[in-house]
Image 1 (cartoon, protein in one colour):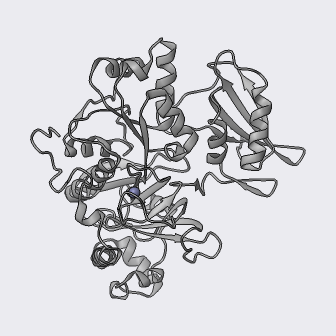
Image 2 (cartoon, helix red, strand yellow):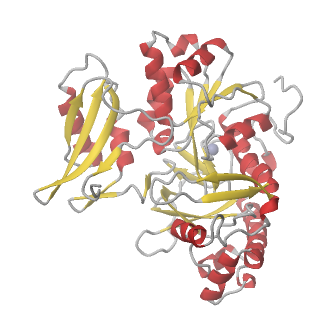
Image 3 (tube, helix red, strand yellow):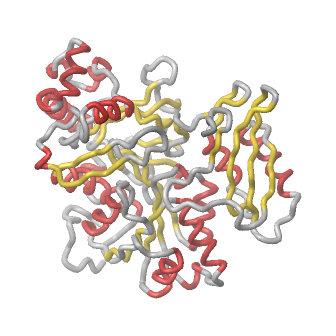
Length: 450
Ligand SMILES: [Zn+2]
């Protein structure tokens, strides 16, 4: 491997970025977690008025939290609380636990619901926490110093691939800033330069492939992409979407799981056992039953609640991610001892819909619909007719698709998702495309007309 001036990959041994930690016995990981937990709890209580208030209201002090078993004594933190804190005390809220002068980055949540939340980081939070763990995650996928990488991302206020960009520099990759470029320019970059890795949202990867095809360019033979990784949407972990991306680029495709408020907490390793690992030494994870709030065991689904163990500017303790995950029951063939979630994030509580009394996750509909080669883009509309819930899946097909596909998709939705939906076929180029988070779901039952 020609690493040139050897990046920051100081411990990397060709397989692991940080072998000692990544393969540490579970007891050792737990010891690291508890040391960091005690420190971040002390720091939060001493410096964040938000947390001092929450601790006081719960009648506990930082000394009450010594081990993982003590965690349930701590109240949960929600996004609504962060929003409220920043609305009451613009701009950063009383959560801020370091002087603002020590902060070097600000990013915003994408506000799919409500006002955006601003998240700040100190130099240490950003470079030794967020970026370092991101680098370790993509190294586990196989990104190496001799890769040239194209982040196809607008570099706006969203954290998305900002952290990826800096992490790839840290590994020693050559990074092509693809920010202001058009889709056509990005396709040209891939044809012209020896770019081997692409990162963007899964929706945008599919759009890039579609546009290339329209321009008569076969990315499989005319570009040298060997690996893509995705975040920002669940698609990166959905097998049918992943498969479509891999087919279009002739590459392997990986998922990064994360959220602005907490961290890029999860990553898929090279053997791809069907799920994401979590950076156990950077975030402490709990998976709680949706009804009782009690921890669930391996193999059971629950809401992921995370405590960030390294962010000092805006510490978050027991933060409700609203992501639904399932703890894997078997060790990973990659040899990492980090906890793993089967299927990555399998659903979002925010996205969950109830249709005729039954819970439906739109990501399951996506998994089914995008499994068809005839589907170019789609949209799901939930509506109510004469008091009854209806689901319509609008499907934009590729040119010359057989109209009988509508019926086939309807059958498949019934079989795999367990829903009765009407599939409406639309001609090519009739639905919008997305370069950030795709918004493919419309719920007309709750939308109030202006
Ligand atoms: Zn693994």
